[in-house]
Image 1 (tube, rainbow, N blue to C red):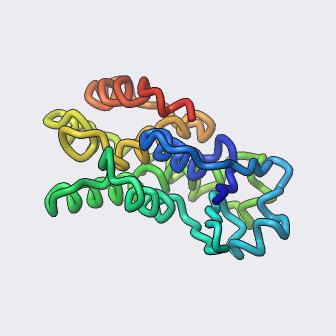
Image 2: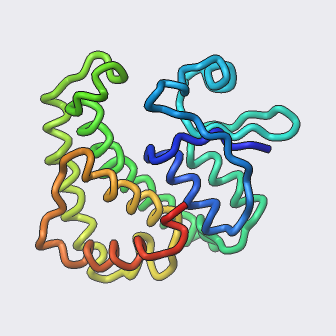
Amino acid sequence: MRLFDGGRAPNPRRTRIFIAEKAIEVPLEPVDMGRLEHRSETIASRNPLQRLPVLELDDGTVITESIAICRYFEALHPEPPLFGTTPIEIATIEMWNRRIELGLYASVAAAFRHTHPAMAEWEVPQVPVWGEANRDKAVDFLRVFDAHLAGHRFAAGDAFSVADITGVVAVDFMKPAKIALPADLANVARWYGEVSARPSMTA
């Protein structure tokens, strides 16, 4: 088994944090995305979308997409549960992970990919007006999230989950995307302070 890893890029990082929370060892194959190594034959032959991370199992099976990889490891190592255990926990975590992916994670990514000069070769064509619109969309979602967190310790309730991993990676990626976290979102600030202090966040 080996995990082709893309360093500080959001999706590879999301997967590494999940693995660290599980306290399992997975051999990493570093891929330098700055040098466009994710477009090499090594990656393209395993993932035609040329995206990371890519998990290759010992029998040659390839799994791509960060959440799919996380679900694979959850099935192998169910403790601690990061996708929930009861039907309501599973559904609630799925709901909030999806909301955060669509409302925040994707918006931050669009802002970065469509406005940052370094992404001009990656995002063809760049649509700056779409990037700017997504800055506002990300902040709008954070206000909804802040109201939710007024009554919940973590994104999907009282237990840390994959939804929190998605959220903290998105918030951290706001800095390179040049999106400021509004100072009045006290509940988001409280949540972020707690989850970002977890040891897994350095993975």
